Image 1 (cartoon, one colour):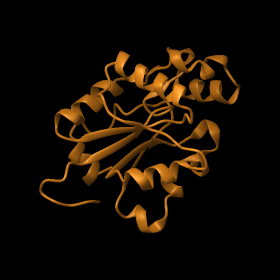
Image 2 (cartoon, one colour):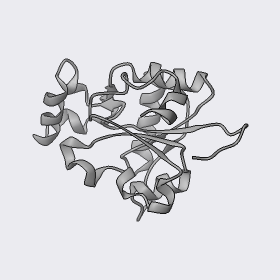
Image 3 (cartoon, one colour):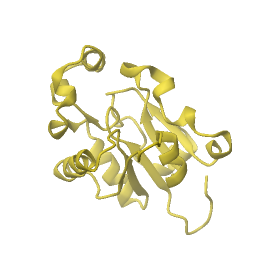
Image 4 (cartoon, helix red, strand yellow):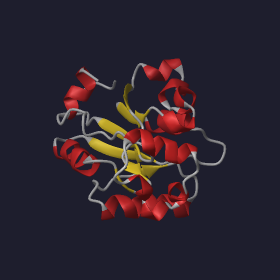
Length: 172
């Protein structure tokens, strides 16, 4: 992790499956949400109707209020869909922050290595293949040492993560 008295800790939060979910997942258990993705539920592809998972907006606002720099990582590749993410985040009370995405020829690890967050919060990608689909395991070894990985269950949200973002660096 980057050190320094005046360094602002940068937390990159993955969007889809980590802090946002399809609207058809509302009122469902986490396991049912995973099954909806595997079964191709049509609401999974209704990007503009995505909703926050739990109290994710409140949690990220709290981290930002404590001085963390929040940035987001989107599963989308096109500017139009990324703009949909930006609108969803704003509408749902998430902190205003850059939304990064994969450019042509890039993988998630390329984006993370370019942005260099101190902490990467992502889900376990259970519905789409698990660890092989996650970002952190794909990051080059020489970069991994500077990024703290925090993994939550897909569609389980980040409510259970520490309110104090410094605890993410120490414990998660």
